[in-house]
Length: 409
Image 1 (cartoon, rainbow, N blue to C red):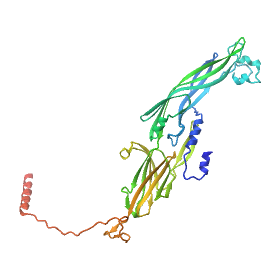
Image 2 (image 1 turned 135 degrees about the horizontal axis):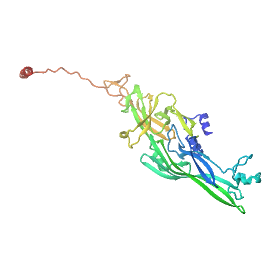
Image 3 (image 1 turned 135 degrees about the vertical axis):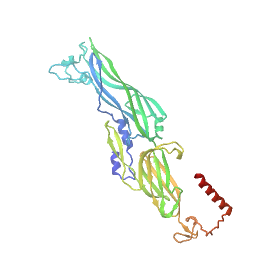
Image 4 (image 1 turned 90 degrees about the vertical axis):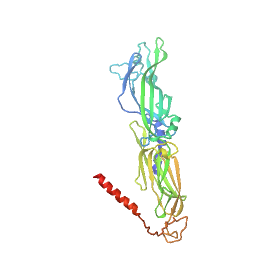
């Protein structure tokens, strides 16, 4: 419902519905269609077939095919399981049914057919009380130089806090590697009623299957880096005032705003969002870029190590171009918000000045003001200089040219 309201209520900018997607995916049972592994389990001398297959569906949050360090992030295993049951003995002309607790406890059970669930031929019926699946896995997470292993017994595996912290610096082109090793056990809890008094005992039958799963997932972080592109010297001609800024980000930006002297001047909305469902039944967030002027987005790996205090790499490159009017000092700010509501600010004080003539008048004809006018260059009239060539020097030059001519012959 919140996702619907996102499109109906006017907002300053579109917000990524990542909380809705994470919440939905963490409650979903991911399934898929694929070739399965088939084996059997012996229960009361009966072979019960089990077909299964597993894969890592991915993280509970994917935005444009990249995951990010948000609260509640999990890795989800998708399962394709067909688990057989304890069927009654066949009888001509009679329908099939499962010898389970529902059948045994049913008031309408036909006791004349109890023999069909006497599966060990001791004149006491047996039934399947319940079946369940248990997981025993070691999950190793690796991101760059960071690695942590945890134990898990669930198909929804929480990402450790240390890995989430490491992901905050992920460029968007780095991979979070997930390796899962362990086994899955199929348990049949059977109520075995034993003659001669048909007293009840519970017996567990189980079969195990080995799991070995791997997946690499693109991960993005929260770091940002700002560069003033124009004016690079922070001083410019007042007739062409520019505030052009490049922003490097590890996360897509969804909103940007430029203020001039404390007043909002222009805003940009680089993203709109929608939710799709993938082949595992999980939700993914897809963004779209509107066609707006004076900004651009590029997706490319960049590592400006020499220009920043920390050695971070970035995937998303934005350029914002802004023109304005005004003389003297002007305070300009760029405020950005990424897809996960993280904010960043960039501030500059830029000087705009007029040209002057003879350090007396500006190009507009008014008197020079040092704070708003550049100094003029000065010019002086110089006289021509006579160059005297000594006769001896000229004679030596002629002799050298003569010798050079005859030596070459």
